[in-house]
Length: 73
Length: 372
Image 1 (cartoon, rainbow over the protein chains, first blue to last red):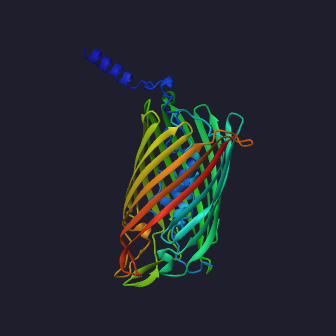
Image 2: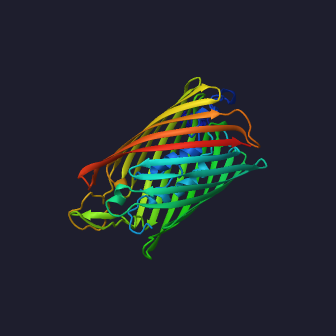
Image 3: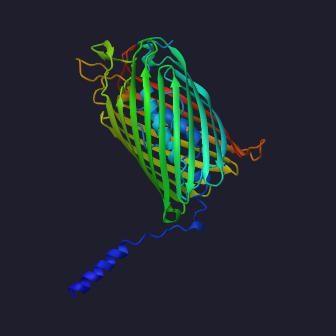
């Protein structure tokens, strides 16, 4: 009985390790492919815009900005 | 020409070059599938005006694919700066200068992996910076998830134009990102970045104050920072998208900040898109910041970017698809962008009138891009 319980637990654990299946099928991703759904809809402009903030704030990092404009005050 | 002006942001700017290098590698990654960035020629004119500072200049970038697996880009950026900021007018005389930046990157697509090598170099009269970077992005779960890893190394040289002072900065940036398809209409991303800097991290021109008397600033020679950002974007209705984002930041100088951002994007008609945005930023000061010290301390700063302050930003952008080709360029687009930014400082005094400092800024962008 104890061995059977262990077997059931082991199978359950292995089942938990199974790779998750994509829950959004490729044919459902039309909206996601819309340019409006990009986090940066114009990377070049966003880079400059973010830089304007970065050089005037004490923080940096984990953003999608990457320079542009001088930091000189 | 700029011998005695107080300048800020140079060190901070160089740190951004590292982010530029990493971002060159990581921002092109789509959550849906690993693809090479599209071939694109871009030109932009940018303008900043606020707090007595004007920065204008052109920017160019060209990206071209080679075969099905490789893509390369090169960009050139110019800042023409005219500064009469509060730092400058309270300690020296206004100045002008020019900064030039060159960047290049190569992307290599292999299956669901995108690998990128990048370089950014910046040169101005008293600051040189070179940054190299490497990054890899891998998609999983049938294109549902993308993991990105990035590393950048920067080496800068800091100097003064009026003396033979010279020092250096070394910078290591580590970036980890995860983007996720949540539903058929929602994307999310979680990003972390650590930046480790050592060297001369303050401004060689700027002064702190002790009982009203100006003395050179003194900063620690090391700074480690951590930033975590969570973003989401969703198509709330056909042709209407909403984006939300939050970033938390903390470093070993005890600077802590919170950033909230939101944007609403609407396709007004085919080929014409408009968006409005709002950004709120609030920050706690560095442990060694003071408006006016009452004694001499080991470290002393009076950089308003290390003080306690808040900013509010209202932005708008319009993008037109011109719908016709121009020479070798097809699918040409024009974008116009504007941001109004209000800064309010809680513990930085305008010593000209004794009142707390604050100012408005205006940012304009005109962009043109064409696909091959």
